[in-house]
Length: 260
Image (tube, rainbow, N blue to C red; front, side):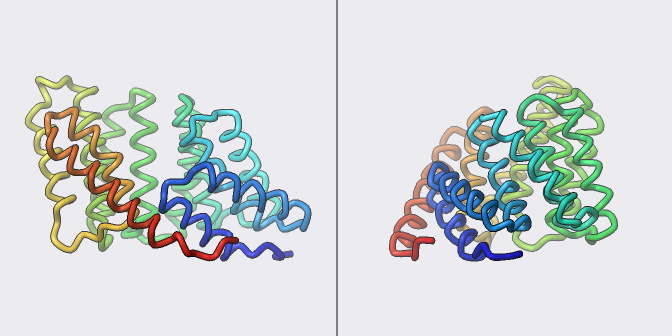
């Protein structure tokens, strides 16, 4: 039964995310999750739990993030979609939850499950595959598996280089790689490779034709403190200005949007 208007719900969710209104986004999803339960709409419940685990992860709420991750996994089984790309995406999101809360071994179980699905269902030049490799690299870094993490970042860069418009995503991958090199080899021994990663990240962020929408703003927010750490103080401030300006414009553009 598909009685929940998920297209409208997700459109509203995207508008709230565009203005960085995490609290409003959570309220929206929690309201519709209860409606989906009352309606017996398990596909809608799955979609909503999938988003909720990410929101609670970002909020630092371990118990709620894991609760919705477990709910989403149970719904994958109940809805019969195991083995599909959608199921793989749920597994990736579950992995990010467990990585965020210091459980990298648990996270790798879900990343490997996602990798098996994506390997069968997606091509090698798909952004979802690149995202999986990035997440696996972060997990391996947390587990102290530095060589494997570096290899995974390399795979992510190779995949994303084939994806049009992926310059900002590749920039954050390079900055994460710089941080990995610092941790694995020390700042002094890895300084040349770190400098190269940071410079390449800058060049990608400034690339001609790079779209500067809310996705770019999100990357600006992630990149700014890393650039700042490596001494690019003025550029870090510029990225923060861009982030604020883009979110401000998105807020003005969505002010008259229809409420769900």
